[in-house]
Length: 81
Image (cartoon, rainbow, N blue to C red; front, side):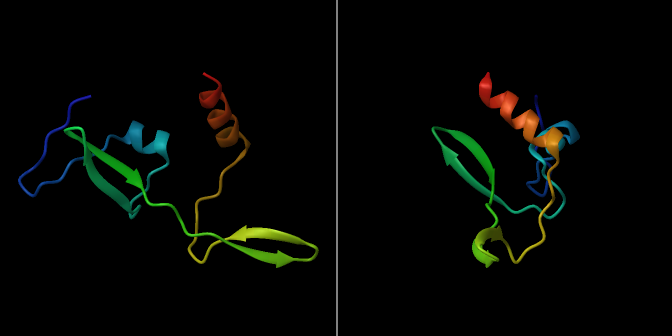
């Protein structure tokens, strides 16, 4: 897929890629070069463990997009390939 850099240095990520990677407006990305290529990677949301009852629950101070069973299934299928 080809893209063009505009006069302000911006690159548009197609809707299909944004949906596949679950990128939304405001998502923070890390950008770097590697072997002459440009890489973009979403910055991981910091997580911490909180005791709830007798167990620990991973939580974050920032709101995150919830995932559903279809999302989990899609990731599992992609990892099996």
